[in-house]
Image (cartoon, rainbow over all chains, first blue to last red):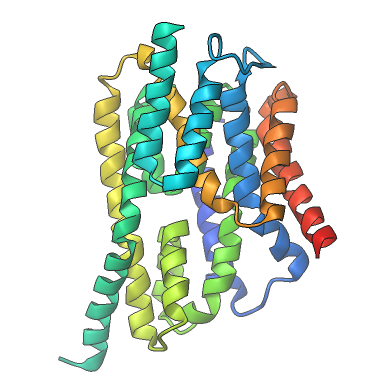
Length: 105
Length: 232
């Protein structure tokens, strides 16, 4: 499958998800068993994207600031995200911690 | 001026104004995405074009990451659509309001549906009744986000071409997801969904076909549903 075909398929699929009730299913209400799981998609997916990216180093969990500075940087970023919800501040702070640890450890 | 045209104009400008504060979050996200696209194996042109073709930031980032990792196309598609499945929920909530719109609007506006456009519109729809105003409120909000996203993607691509790999800018990807994650946790079941989703994704990181992300996400969703049922 070419990259273009993958991307176009995702684009069409995403459009259909957005169109679903508005354009096709109309006023029909979604049953609870279908609606309730969707509420948890955002926290579950986002955590599944973040956790391996910051805690794993070469396939194993590594929390040492010396060998995996991303774990500590992510913790700092998490605190800032929690307090400020400011995307720019979180990115700058997280990157700064990684750079500092890389430079000094 | 006929009343409906006045409602059209105030609707569009009210919608645009309502999302303006949210652009502070959208712009850095778009810049990071553009930088990632510039450095990805699919390249700036195709990577950047996902901003038009897919127009969903988290799914776009995950798509490029998975393609870069050499994951099979079917898994990349399934993962991206799981990430975007939350749009079913938005579509269901907006449908009663959109039924009053002209057919052409009902089929074109969903293309620009986003978390942010949904959030501001659904709040406003609780306060107003005029369908013309509602249609243009959504249009103003959603198009403002669309244009901002396209511009920040392009700027990011231009910046990305000059950033050396030693800056570890790929770390900005999980940082962006982190900023989105924090406000998505509003209850204890949400927190359980996140902890299980992240934990299982780590445990399943070595899963074949790059299914680890999907296994983690689905486990997290199930944990959230169970937690909500138990705690009720």
